[in-house]
Image 1 (cartoon, helix red, strand yellow):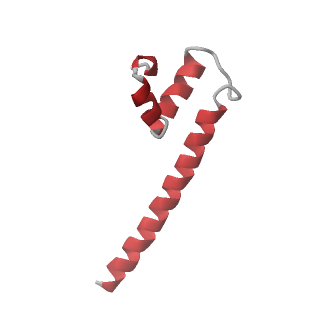
Image 2 (cartoon, helix red, strand yellow):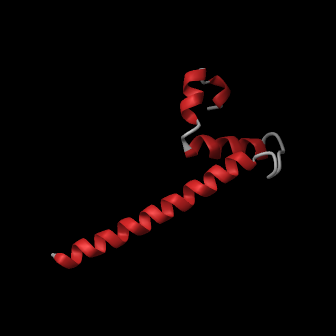
Image 3 (cartoon, rainbow, N blue to C red):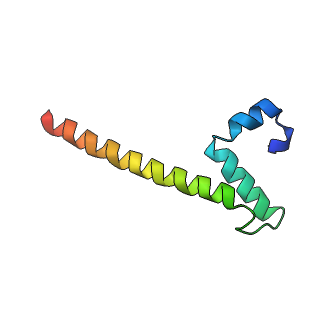
Length: 71
């Protein structure tokens, strides 16, 4: 579903959703022929989000191991 159909209030909320950025970047490259410089904002949001999720997952895994050792 293209984001151009969203009302303005949903577009403002979508700015925090990584799927929005993925969709915008992919549609920009695939449909509009944009390059990395044109989708840099979406790319960097997705890059930082993925690093944060990997770090969060690693910390959660370490915590789970500590809790399991105490049982």
